[in-house]
View 1 (cartoon, rainbow, N blue to C red):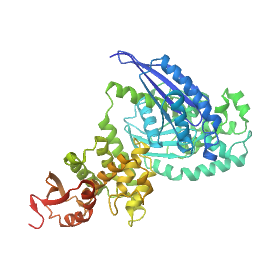
View 2 (view 1 turned 45 degrees about the vertical axis):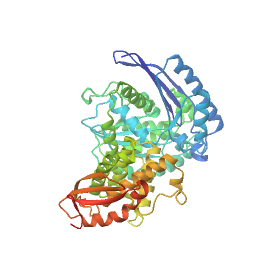
View 3 (view 1 turned 120 degrees about the vertical axis):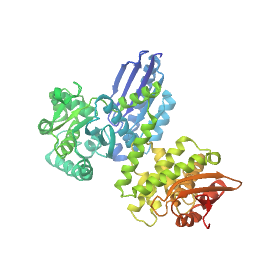
View 4 (view 1 turned 60 degrees about the vertical axis):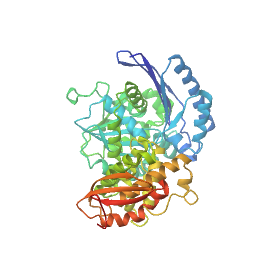
Length: 520
């Protein structure tokens, strides 16, 4: 294997980080370049909704410098990602276009779920968590990601708008912070964190791991080396809760300049270290049995590199990746009290239909996976109201973070679930469908049609269909169900739900049960 070089760029709300790795011919990997550009892109974004022009220009200049390093290092593959500041800004698209135009680097705005997945990947690759239940807290400038990882898999994930730049500019933007300001921030955090902490404490957390520049700084300031019996890397220091509480009391009485001088901090760390510390104290002190947290000393950029290197080596396990996404979707379904057995059966039937109908739908493996997730979540809207639950399913999916899925994938899945019943996809009446490209509209319509058929074939929610076989005839799709049941309700329901299928594919549907027509 020849040498290969990889670059990750993390455009955060408080700074921009680049890391370049070289993979040697023997498979070993070593860093060749790292740099942190002190560009606070999130400045005022969380108050105004706009990226400041000065911050945009600094970001473009930073990328122009990155381009020089990338060319010098003869990089094979680059991935640049942006998090909450760029994601939330009204003019985030403008930044992406201007960076592409100036440096030729494509900046990708990732969802909180994708952010969580990449951080978890970095942490679990460095620290063996296979026999532990871990809470990973990633503190960024705009948001904080919480992931509960059990035996290496994420079982709970949530993103909250508790980022350090956001909190600093909302509550603590004075040189000297008053007790009242801290009290207001604590009250706000307590309310926002309540349901998340309840969900976290449903698990018996063995270890808390923190990531992000502020956690690394706290590890440097008050961290202690891990004990040998804890079986952790030596550069993963423990930040004891008592020491963290003491540190908060000290820095809350100091100005930013005094913090910089006493603790040898940069200016753009000294102002946000207080909100970061307050968030960590609030979380760690409310996790049952926690005595502190460990600074993992890896982050988003490292997770990006792990994935790029694995994919280049062809050692990336896509089957496991998709299984983890289905697991995350199922966890979301449980949050909304969905009928798990029905969701599983509809997913199973949808997969059978998709595979056997390939000659007429001609969709990709990616489409098959979107259908699987949509089938899993198609009825979660019933949590809001059984009436019109397909519309509520769209809203809940669209506004959820599903670890491992990109924003566009979530948008498509939400649309597929939206049309699993009632009206046809309509670009004139439905804004969310009109905004899709022509190819995406075709994809959604075909997949929703297949989902409707699968849903109809479990009308009783009793999994009466064991399997099915499809025959593509002249103008007719014949579906032969294998079942101990007569499937009368399923056949009746399919008369209505099969109309979208006929509209999408031009085929009517005929149902057999164990090789015979229903009336026989």
